[in-house]
Image 1 (tube, rainbow, N blue to C red):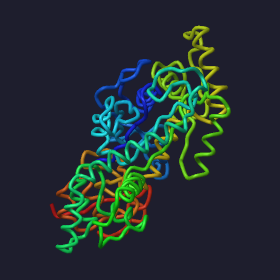
Image 2 (image 1 turned 60 degrees about the vertical axis):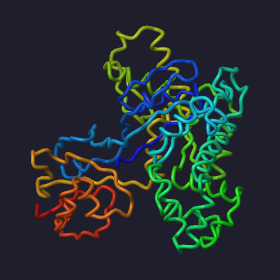
Image 3 (image 1 turned 135 degrees about the horizontal axis):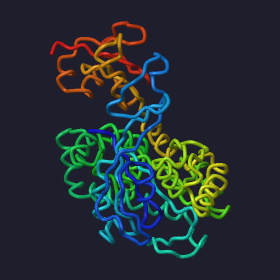
Image 4 (image 1 turned 120 degrees about the vertical axis):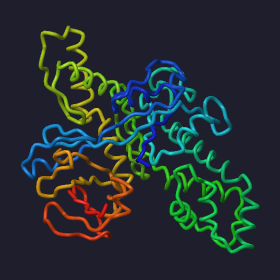
Length: 401
């Protein structure tokens, strides 16, 4: 299963705008709650140095893009319906939101840092709502959703584990199949909060909620995108620092600015690369006064103030949060090509700690099943199945198939 990042938040905070700015898809954008009914899926890109510069070759990417020596590596994004308070009880589109979220490995929580939308996502005036309330409520809703699933038949399951000598974390993992939560996540959550592995029947509702909350943090880590940062009151921007002090990753973002810049770049009006701190106007004569003013506003109120629109930073911080590296498989370690002659064609995101054999399976099941050895394209050395991959590795897999 490919890695998937969920774009989450209450209605009307700029989730779909963020999604559009970060992907090649075009979700509907409108200023009213529940515009996004069905989950929109798209591809976001992580920036990494492409080995083409180091090897002095012109690459021909297949599953990714290379722009001036920077490789843009794909990762799946899902933009889900807006979440409102009590969604875990089925309010609003709550059940659909939570179902859409099942396979997300991490979350980017879009928060309206301008404080201009209330808890339901309705406009309420600039600075009238505390954005920190959104952080708390979304975490609580996901925790209560997880707890609701856990509590079903939990007493029976717990007693059976004790009588039959089964491991509670293994049994819970079976129950949570399909939620993107594995046995290791569950074991670590139980251990972290000090619950008794041998006596799950003694866990009370309060402990189950604490466990569910810890499981949420471990299995679906969350980054906060402080969106609409260009119009946010200074007091709200300072709240981002308060969140960082207690361990959150917070990135000021302006999804509207990124969307405007990428659209202008697609039309050839400006030279702009996602994640950049500036842009160059290429066709000033084709831009009217309003457009030029809008671009200058973005430059002064977003790029110069925050160093970027924040969209690309959110994607890359999410990848760091997920502990992912990028590896380049090839079929010819001398020419760095695949069987079709494409140079450095594919770039794969892999978990830190993944091995050469894991990469073989990532490329194709048969390659993993018939793995013989791998070759490091830089050193030309043979490496074994248990070789731990490093970020930027270029690897040839040798198999007997």
